[in-house]
Image (cartoon, rainbow, N blue to C red; front, side, top):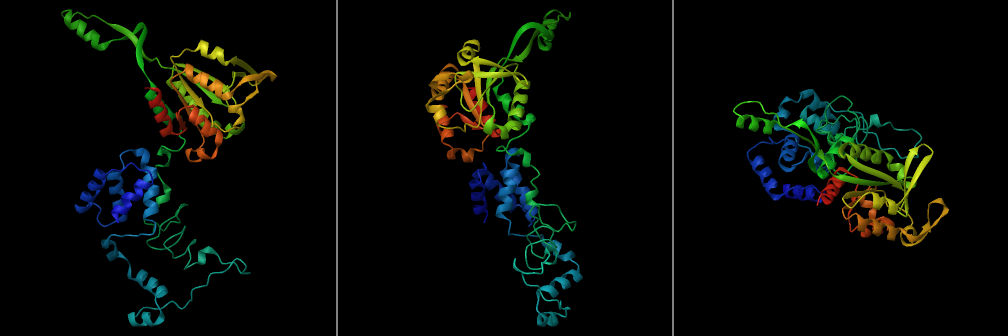
Length: 392
Protein backbone atom coordinates (compact mmCIF):
# COMPACT_ATOMS: atom_id res chain seq x y z
CA UNK A 1 0.00 0.00 0.00
CA UNK A 2 2.77 2.44 0.82
CA UNK A 3 4.43 1.90 -2.53
CA UNK A 4 1.18 2.92 -4.19
CA UNK A 5 1.00 5.91 -1.85
CA UNK A 6 4.55 6.92 -2.79
CA UNK A 7 3.75 6.65 -6.51
CA UNK A 8 0.52 8.59 -5.92
CA UNK A 9 2.53 11.48 -4.46
CA UNK A 10 4.89 11.39 -7.45
CA UNK A 11 1.92 11.58 -9.81
CA UNK A 12 0.73 14.67 -7.95
CA UNK A 13 4.10 16.33 -8.72
CA UNK A 14 5.38 16.23 -5.16
CA UNK A 15 9.22 16.10 -5.04
CA UNK A 16 9.50 12.96 -2.91
CA UNK A 17 12.56 10.73 -3.21
CA UNK A 18 13.29 7.08 -2.52
CA UNK A 19 15.55 8.05 0.40
CA UNK A 20 12.69 9.92 2.08
CA UNK A 21 10.35 6.98 1.45
CA UNK A 22 12.81 4.61 3.15
CA UNK A 23 13.05 7.03 6.08
CA UNK A 24 9.28 6.87 6.40
CA UNK A 25 9.40 3.05 6.46
CA UNK A 26 12.08 3.13 9.18
CA UNK A 27 9.95 5.50 11.25
CA UNK A 28 6.94 3.23 10.84
CA UNK A 29 9.02 0.20 11.86
CA UNK A 30 10.00 2.10 15.01
CA UNK A 31 6.29 2.48 15.89
CA UNK A 32 6.14 6.27 15.56
CA UNK A 33 2.78 6.30 13.79
CA UNK A 34 1.06 4.29 16.57
CA UNK A 35 -1.50 2.71 14.17
CA UNK A 36 -3.34 6.01 13.74
CA UNK A 37 -4.17 7.73 10.45
CA UNK A 38 -3.61 11.13 12.03
CA UNK A 39 -0.22 10.06 13.35
CA UNK A 40 0.70 8.57 9.99
CA UNK A 41 -0.30 11.83 8.26
CA UNK A 42 1.98 13.88 10.53
CA UNK A 43 4.84 11.39 10.21
CA UNK A 44 4.52 11.15 6.42
CA UNK A 45 4.55 14.92 6.06
CA UNK A 46 7.67 15.21 8.23
CA UNK A 47 9.52 12.52 6.27
CA UNK A 48 8.38 13.28 2.74
CA UNK A 49 7.80 17.04 2.51
CA UNK A 50 11.01 19.07 2.41
CA UNK A 51 9.51 22.50 1.75
CA UNK A 52 6.54 24.11 3.49
CA UNK A 53 5.41 25.41 0.09
CA UNK A 54 4.32 21.83 -0.68
CA UNK A 55 2.17 21.35 2.45
CA UNK A 56 -1.08 22.16 0.66
CA UNK A 57 -0.29 19.89 -2.30
CA UNK A 58 0.57 17.08 0.13
CA UNK A 59 -2.71 17.56 2.04
CA UNK A 60 -4.68 17.27 -1.20
CA UNK A 61 -2.80 14.16 -2.34
CA UNK A 62 -3.06 12.52 1.10
CA UNK A 63 -6.76 13.26 1.40
CA UNK A 64 -7.45 11.93 -2.08
CA UNK A 65 -5.58 8.67 -1.42
CA UNK A 66 -6.97 7.96 2.04
CA UNK A 67 -10.43 9.42 1.54
CA UNK A 68 -12.15 6.04 1.86
CA UNK A 69 -9.82 4.61 4.48
CA UNK A 70 -10.45 5.11 8.19
CA UNK A 71 -8.09 4.00 10.93
CA UNK A 72 -8.36 4.43 14.65
CA UNK A 73 -6.07 3.58 17.47
CA UNK A 74 -7.14 0.32 19.08
CA UNK A 75 -6.95 1.94 22.50
CA UNK A 76 -9.78 4.27 21.54
CA UNK A 77 -12.21 1.37 21.22
CA UNK A 78 -11.96 0.65 24.92
CA UNK A 79 -13.47 4.00 25.86
CA UNK A 80 -16.52 3.81 23.56
CA UNK A 81 -19.67 4.04 25.70
CA UNK A 82 -21.80 0.85 25.69
CA UNK A 83 -25.00 2.82 25.06
CA UNK A 84 -23.51 4.20 21.83
CA UNK A 85 -22.58 0.70 20.64
CA UNK A 86 -26.09 -0.51 21.43
CA UNK A 87 -27.73 2.33 19.51
CA UNK A 88 -25.52 1.80 16.45
CA UNK A 89 -26.04 -1.98 16.51
CA UNK A 90 -29.79 -1.47 16.83
CA UNK A 91 -29.81 0.54 13.64
CA UNK A 92 -27.49 -1.70 11.62
CA UNK A 93 -28.47 -5.23 12.72
CA UNK A 94 -31.67 -7.11 12.03
CA UNK A 95 -34.26 -7.76 14.75
CA UNK A 96 -33.18 -11.41 15.00
CA UNK A 97 -29.51 -10.48 15.47
CA UNK A 98 -30.43 -7.88 18.08
CA UNK A 99 -32.47 -10.47 19.96
CA UNK A 100 -29.52 -12.86 19.99
CA UNK A 101 -27.27 -10.11 21.36
CA UNK A 102 -29.91 -8.86 23.83
CA UNK A 103 -29.83 -5.40 22.22
CA UNK A 104 -33.00 -3.36 21.66
CA UNK A 105 -33.71 -3.14 17.94
CA UNK A 106 -34.59 0.08 16.16
CA UNK A 107 -38.12 -0.43 14.90
CA UNK A 108 -38.07 2.63 12.62
CA UNK A 109 -37.35 1.38 9.09
CA UNK A 110 -34.84 3.13 6.91
CA UNK A 111 -36.45 5.63 4.63
CA UNK A 112 -35.99 5.05 0.94
CA UNK A 113 -34.20 7.52 -1.26
CA UNK A 114 -36.62 9.90 -2.92
CA UNK A 115 -36.32 10.76 -6.57
CA UNK A 116 -36.35 14.39 -7.80
CA UNK A 117 -39.95 14.00 -8.97
CA UNK A 118 -41.35 13.03 -5.57
CA UNK A 119 -43.81 15.47 -4.05
CA UNK A 120 -42.59 15.12 -0.48
CA UNK A 121 -39.11 16.48 -0.17
CA UNK A 122 -36.68 14.52 2.01
CA UNK A 123 -34.47 16.70 4.17
CA UNK A 124 -30.76 15.84 4.33
CA UNK A 125 -30.82 15.86 8.13
CA UNK A 126 -33.04 12.75 8.15
CA UNK A 127 -30.69 10.68 6.00
CA UNK A 128 -29.29 7.49 7.48
CA UNK A 129 -28.04 5.73 4.39
CA UNK A 130 -27.04 8.50 2.03
CA UNK A 131 -24.29 11.09 2.11
CA UNK A 132 -25.70 14.29 3.51
CA UNK A 133 -26.18 16.54 6.50
CA UNK A 134 -26.80 14.58 9.66
CA UNK A 135 -26.45 11.20 7.98
CA UNK A 136 -24.67 8.11 9.26
CA UNK A 137 -22.45 7.81 6.21
CA UNK A 138 -18.74 8.30 6.93
CA UNK A 139 -18.63 10.80 4.06
CA UNK A 140 -20.39 14.12 3.90
CA UNK A 141 -20.81 17.37 5.78
CA UNK A 142 -22.44 17.47 9.20
CA UNK A 143 -22.87 13.71 9.62
CA UNK A 144 -22.80 11.86 12.94
CA UNK A 145 -20.68 8.89 11.90
CA UNK A 146 -17.99 8.26 14.55
CA UNK A 147 -15.24 7.95 11.96
CA UNK A 148 -16.61 10.37 9.43
CA UNK A 149 -14.54 12.49 7.09
CA UNK A 150 -15.64 16.11 6.73
CA UNK A 151 -15.55 17.16 3.06
CA UNK A 152 -15.11 20.93 3.36
CA UNK A 153 -17.51 23.19 5.28
CA UNK A 154 -17.80 24.03 8.96
CA UNK A 155 -17.94 21.40 11.67
CA UNK A 156 -21.34 20.83 13.29
CA UNK A 157 -19.75 20.50 16.69
CA UNK A 158 -19.64 16.75 17.28
CA UNK A 159 -15.94 16.68 16.31
CA UNK A 160 -16.20 13.12 15.06
CA UNK A 161 -14.34 13.54 11.75
CA UNK A 162 -11.03 11.70 11.58
CA UNK A 163 -9.41 14.50 9.62
CA UNK A 164 -10.75 17.56 7.83
CA UNK A 165 -8.30 17.04 4.96
CA UNK A 166 -9.86 19.71 2.80
CA UNK A 167 -9.42 22.43 5.43
CA UNK A 168 -5.88 22.80 3.99
CA UNK A 169 -4.23 24.99 6.59
CA UNK A 170 -1.29 25.73 4.27
CA UNK A 171 -3.29 26.61 1.18
CA UNK A 172 -1.51 29.96 0.73
CA UNK A 173 1.90 28.28 0.54
CA UNK A 174 1.37 26.32 -2.67
CA UNK A 175 3.98 27.40 -5.21
CA UNK A 176 1.53 27.09 -8.09
CA UNK A 177 -1.03 29.65 -6.94
CA UNK A 178 -0.93 33.42 -7.03
CA UNK A 179 0.38 34.79 -3.76
CA UNK A 180 0.61 38.16 -2.06
CA UNK A 181 3.17 40.92 -2.28
CA UNK A 182 5.35 39.59 0.54
CA UNK A 183 5.82 36.20 -1.11
CA UNK A 184 6.56 37.80 -4.48
CA UNK A 185 9.25 39.92 -2.82
CA UNK A 186 10.93 36.77 -1.54
CA UNK A 187 10.98 35.31 -5.06
CA UNK A 188 12.26 38.53 -6.65
CA UNK A 189 15.21 38.65 -4.26
CA UNK A 190 16.94 35.94 -6.29
CA UNK A 191 17.74 38.65 -8.82
CA UNK A 192 19.51 40.96 -6.40
CA UNK A 193 23.18 41.79 -6.96
CA UNK A 194 24.65 44.04 -4.31
CA UNK A 195 27.46 46.53 -4.70
CA UNK A 196 28.84 49.37 -2.60
CA UNK A 197 28.76 52.53 -4.65
CA UNK A 198 28.50 56.21 -3.78
CA UNK A 199 29.62 58.24 -0.78
CA UNK A 200 30.88 56.45 2.36
CA UNK A 201 28.02 57.07 4.78
CA UNK A 202 27.88 53.72 6.62
CA UNK A 203 30.09 52.58 9.50
CA UNK A 204 32.42 49.75 8.55
CA UNK A 205 32.49 47.89 11.85
CA UNK A 206 35.01 45.21 10.84
CA UNK A 207 37.29 47.77 9.23
CA UNK A 208 37.07 50.02 12.30
CA UNK A 209 38.04 47.18 14.66
CA UNK A 210 40.97 46.12 12.48
CA UNK A 211 42.22 49.68 12.01
CA UNK A 212 41.89 50.44 15.73
CA UNK A 213 43.88 47.32 16.60
CA UNK A 214 46.65 48.32 14.19
CA UNK A 215 46.60 51.82 15.68
CA UNK A 216 47.59 50.58 19.17
CA UNK A 217 44.02 50.88 20.49
CA UNK A 218 43.36 54.44 19.33
CA UNK A 219 39.91 54.60 17.79
CA UNK A 220 40.10 54.84 14.00
CA UNK A 221 36.63 55.00 12.42
CA UNK A 222 36.21 53.59 8.93
CA UNK A 223 33.25 54.39 6.70
CA UNK A 224 32.00 52.68 3.55
CA UNK A 225 29.23 53.20 0.94
CA UNK A 226 25.88 51.60 1.62
CA UNK A 227 25.29 48.18 0.10
CA UNK A 228 22.63 48.53 -2.59
CA UNK A 229 21.04 46.33 -5.20
CA UNK A 230 22.49 47.43 -8.53
CA UNK A 231 20.28 45.28 -10.78
CA UNK A 232 18.35 47.33 -13.37
CA UNK A 233 14.91 46.05 -14.34
CA UNK A 234 12.56 47.07 -17.15
CA UNK A 235 8.97 45.74 -16.87
CA UNK A 236 6.40 45.89 -19.67
CA UNK A 237 2.81 45.27 -18.53
CA UNK A 238 0.01 44.15 -20.85
CA UNK A 239 -3.10 46.13 -19.94
CA UNK A 240 -6.76 46.14 -20.92
CA UNK A 241 -8.97 43.50 -22.48
CA UNK A 242 -8.37 39.98 -21.15
CA UNK A 243 -5.83 41.32 -18.64
CA UNK A 244 -8.57 43.01 -16.61
CA UNK A 245 -9.16 39.75 -14.71
CA UNK A 246 -5.48 39.66 -13.68
CA UNK A 247 -5.18 43.19 -12.29
CA UNK A 248 -4.73 42.03 -8.69
CA UNK A 249 -1.76 39.76 -9.50
CA UNK A 250 -0.11 42.45 -11.61
CA UNK A 251 -0.57 45.08 -8.88
CA UNK A 252 1.04 42.77 -6.32
CA UNK A 253 3.97 42.07 -8.65
CA UNK A 254 4.40 45.78 -9.38
CA UNK A 255 4.31 46.70 -5.68
CA UNK A 256 6.87 44.04 -4.81
CA UNK A 257 9.17 45.01 -7.69
CA UNK A 258 9.17 48.68 -6.71
CA UNK A 259 10.28 47.71 -3.22
CA UNK A 260 12.99 45.25 -4.26
CA UNK A 261 14.61 47.09 -7.21
CA UNK A 262 15.97 50.58 -6.89
CA UNK A 263 16.55 50.88 -10.65
CA UNK A 264 13.09 50.00 -12.00
CA UNK A 265 11.41 51.30 -15.14
CA UNK A 266 7.96 50.25 -16.33
CA UNK A 267 5.73 50.81 -19.35
CA UNK A 268 2.47 49.44 -20.75
CA UNK A 269 1.33 47.84 -23.99
CA UNK A 270 -1.79 46.06 -25.21
CA UNK A 271 -1.84 42.42 -26.35
CA UNK A 272 1.37 42.46 -28.39
CA UNK A 273 4.42 44.70 -28.14
CA UNK A 274 4.57 46.87 -31.25
CA UNK A 275 6.23 50.15 -32.19
CA UNK A 276 4.94 52.10 -29.16
CA UNK A 277 4.53 51.71 -25.40
CA UNK A 278 3.08 54.19 -22.92
CA UNK A 279 2.85 55.39 -19.35
CA UNK A 280 -0.08 56.71 -17.35
CA UNK A 281 0.53 60.24 -16.06
CA UNK A 282 -2.96 60.68 -14.70
CA UNK A 283 -6.48 59.30 -15.10
CA UNK A 284 -6.85 60.63 -18.66
CA UNK A 285 -3.28 61.48 -19.63
CA UNK A 286 -0.97 59.10 -21.48
CA UNK A 287 2.60 59.60 -22.61
CA UNK A 288 3.66 57.49 -25.61
CA UNK A 289 7.21 56.28 -26.17
CA UNK A 290 8.54 54.70 -29.37
CA UNK A 291 10.17 51.34 -28.81
CA UNK A 292 13.38 52.61 -30.41
CA UNK A 293 13.52 55.37 -27.79
CA UNK A 294 13.04 52.77 -25.05
CA UNK A 295 15.96 50.64 -26.24
CA UNK A 296 18.17 53.70 -26.68
CA UNK A 297 17.45 55.15 -23.22
CA UNK A 298 17.64 51.89 -21.26
CA UNK A 299 20.75 49.95 -22.15
CA UNK A 300 21.49 46.27 -22.52
CA UNK A 301 22.38 45.99 -18.84
CA UNK A 302 18.64 46.11 -17.99
CA UNK A 303 16.75 42.87 -17.27
CA UNK A 304 13.50 42.73 -19.25
CA UNK A 305 10.30 41.28 -17.72
CA UNK A 306 7.17 41.14 -19.88
CA UNK A 307 3.89 40.54 -18.02
CA UNK A 308 0.87 39.49 -20.05
CA UNK A 309 -1.54 36.66 -20.77
CA UNK A 310 -0.26 36.40 -24.38
CA UNK A 311 -3.85 35.85 -25.54
CA UNK A 312 -4.64 37.65 -28.79
CA UNK A 313 -5.33 37.10 -32.45
CA UNK A 314 -2.36 35.37 -34.10
CA UNK A 315 -2.52 38.03 -36.83
CA UNK A 316 -1.23 40.61 -34.32
CA UNK A 317 2.01 38.68 -34.25
CA UNK A 318 2.29 37.68 -37.88
CA UNK A 319 0.89 40.72 -39.72
CA UNK A 320 1.46 44.46 -39.70
CA UNK A 321 -1.40 46.04 -37.73
CA UNK A 322 -2.65 49.56 -37.14
CA UNK A 323 -0.41 51.38 -34.71
CA UNK A 324 -1.21 54.10 -32.22
CA UNK A 325 -2.45 57.54 -33.30
CA UNK A 326 -4.16 55.88 -36.31
CA UNK A 327 -0.82 55.06 -37.90
CA UNK A 328 -0.14 51.72 -39.54
CA UNK A 329 2.93 49.88 -38.35
CA UNK A 330 5.05 48.62 -41.21
CA UNK A 331 6.18 45.59 -39.23
CA UNK A 332 4.43 42.82 -37.35
CA UNK A 333 4.45 42.24 -33.61
CA UNK A 334 6.81 39.31 -34.07
CA UNK A 335 9.41 41.58 -35.69
CA UNK A 336 9.20 44.13 -32.88
CA UNK A 337 9.45 41.46 -30.19
CA UNK A 338 12.49 39.88 -31.85
CA UNK A 339 14.11 43.29 -32.03
CA UNK A 340 13.43 43.87 -28.34
CA UNK A 341 14.81 40.45 -27.36
CA UNK A 342 17.93 41.02 -29.47
CA UNK A 343 18.62 44.16 -27.43
CA UNK A 344 17.77 42.73 -23.99
CA UNK A 345 19.44 39.33 -23.88
CA UNK A 346 18.22 38.75 -20.31
CA UNK A 347 14.43 38.62 -20.76
CA UNK A 348 11.50 36.54 -19.45
CA UNK A 349 7.73 36.54 -19.88
CA UNK A 350 5.39 36.11 -16.86
CA UNK A 351 1.95 34.82 -17.80
CA UNK A 352 -0.94 35.11 -15.27
CA UNK A 353 -2.95 32.45 -17.13
CA UNK A 354 -2.77 28.95 -15.61
CA UNK A 355 -0.02 26.99 -17.29
CA UNK A 356 -2.19 23.93 -17.91
CA UNK A 357 -4.31 25.98 -20.36
CA UNK A 358 -1.45 27.47 -22.38
CA UNK A 359 -1.61 24.79 -25.07
CA UNK A 360 -5.20 25.80 -25.88
CA UNK A 361 -4.23 29.28 -27.17
CA UNK A 362 -2.30 29.58 -30.43
CA UNK A 363 -0.83 33.00 -29.64
CA UNK A 364 0.63 31.69 -26.36
CA UNK A 365 2.37 28.90 -28.24
CA UNK A 366 3.74 31.40 -30.77
CA UNK A 367 5.06 33.73 -28.06
CA UNK A 368 6.61 30.86 -26.08
CA UNK A 369 8.52 29.93 -29.20
CA UNK A 370 9.62 33.53 -29.77
CA UNK A 371 10.73 33.77 -26.13
CA UNK A 372 12.69 30.52 -26.52
CA UNK A 373 10.49 28.98 -23.80
CA UNK A 374 11.37 31.70 -21.31
CA UNK A 375 7.69 32.08 -20.40
CA UNK A 376 6.76 31.30 -16.81
CA UNK A 377 3.45 31.33 -14.87
CA UNK A 378 2.77 34.28 -12.58
CA UNK A 379 3.01 32.15 -9.43
CA UNK A 380 5.58 31.91 -6.65
CA UNK A 381 7.27 28.96 -8.34
CA UNK A 382 7.12 30.63 -11.76
CA UNK A 383 8.65 33.89 -10.52
CA UNK A 384 11.36 31.92 -8.74
CA UNK A 385 12.28 30.12 -11.98
CA UNK A 386 12.19 33.37 -13.95
CA UNK A 387 14.54 35.11 -11.53
CA UNK A 388 16.97 32.18 -11.74
CA UNK A 389 16.94 32.53 -15.52
CA UNK A 390 17.53 36.28 -15.39
CA UNK A 391 20.40 35.93 -12.92
CA UNK A 392 22.44 33.72 -15.27
